[in-house]
Length: 105
Image (cartoon, rainbow, N blue to C red):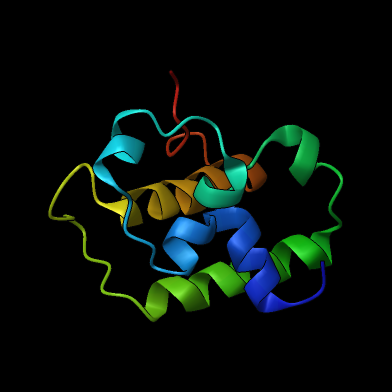
């Protein structure tokens, strides 16, 4: 994958990138459709990327966050933007060994 939009869709999913509103049925049982929800930063994925690719993807995600209204407190725990923010925190925590940010559960 070479383009910024492709990486954003891969990491964040179509629902977030394309601002698709989930139907009520989808919220109850979203399943594991990674195309829609985005791929978590699995070690099996991140370990295959070189440092320049990871840096570029992080820059793409930073740009995406800057284009949106991210604040320390999101309005709802069900906010679609929360999963994108958690993804960024997980990548930083794992890639840069910031264990204080990592989810221990």
